[in-house]
Image (cartoon, rainbow, N blue to C red; front, side, top):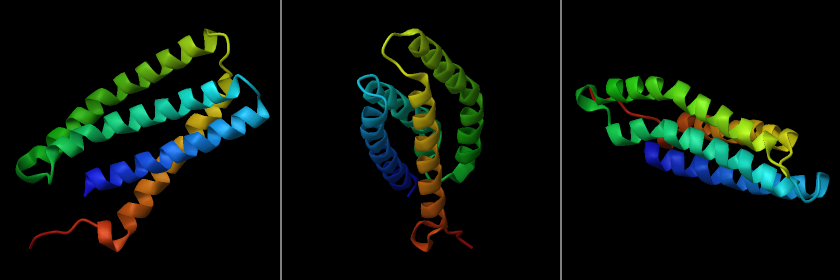
Amino acid sequence: MLAHRNRTAALATALAGLVAVLVAWVAVGAHGPLSALLGAALVLVFFGAGSLPFVVAGDGRGGRSALAFLVLLMTYVLRILLGVAVYAVASEAEGVDTTVVGLTVIGCALVWTNTQVVLGLSRRHRPTLDV
């Protein structure tokens, strides 16, 4: 169930990234598409890596969900630092518009989060409790 939600969120985010590429190309010119692609890739890698511990844990029985949450918390700072480092290197590179990267990151992160919320609240994807 979680893997399906993550695939759907990744697809929606990738589509939002493609829209951002087109908008950046029209708005900024030649430097826009590469910058928008970088922003979308950062979001997909960040959230995709964050969901891996829960995909591996499966249904969460036997305390595996607690372990997955612990791994998620431990890797969160590492993922943030890695994203900041990539952004810092990209901002020094010629041909990268940092405004486009930042706006694409914000837009794609909102798409990922909203897709997860909508799928999580829908009855079909709601987790069930065995009583």
